[in-house]
Figure (cartoon, rainbow, N blue to C red):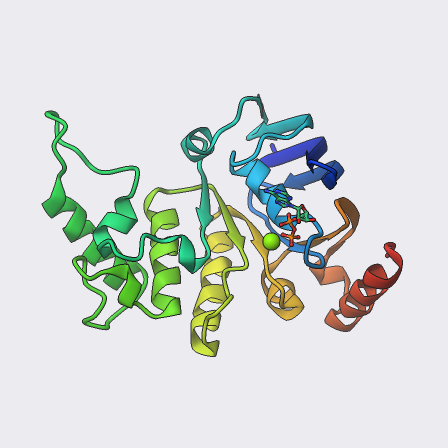
Length: 250
Ligand SMILES: Nc1ncnc2c1ncn2[C@@H]1O[C@H](COP(=O)(O)OP(=O)(O)O)[C@@H](O)[C@H]1O
Ligand SMILES: [Mg+2]
């Protein structure tokens, strides 16, 4: 079975800051991997490399077994990598359907936007796939008026609609209510059930533990260790995280 993502000895610096150093990382075909680590550990940098937002300084990257270089955000999308952005990444003033189709508008053969189709599809996705019933969530409403969970739903619908195989969630529960958080965690589980793969980052170790098959701990730009969640209790994982924060080793 080919890994969806594989990084070999990937490094990345920003000026004097070595954000990542010799990172080896893999994501299996139908696996949810949680990334844990303190603020500044390098988690977001790692996923920004996988989403084509940053180029690594060194190292090799493989997507679906194929080596990639000169990777970019459009290329990553073409290869089925979708990011569920933190809510503020949405175009707040734009309508829901615009946000869903941003950068990938449906067009007819004359290059004109198929607005009606995009609105219909948006409505279908929000109600059928996401179970949103609020009348405020209609294709024409501005996303800026949505609740945190509704905004997150928009990002999720984007990932589902574009049929990504690799879905990346960087702190998606930030600012969500308890109920919205539960819905989000259910969504991550449904990624797994749909046979897809995900990388999940969250400050809350309990969230990560409850959805991930495997947890990779990043500390100061390096992989400090990894665990299959089925092989470790939440208490033990928490103890190890404290130890890493203090000593840099697991
Ligand atoms: N664009 C950037 N320019 C300069 N430094 C950055 C940039 N992005 C991240 N860093 C630095 O790289 C390190 C890792 O950051 P980041 O990957 O965001 O960590 P995490 O997501 O684990 O909190 C931090 O020291 C951060 O300040
Ligand atoms: Mg981060």
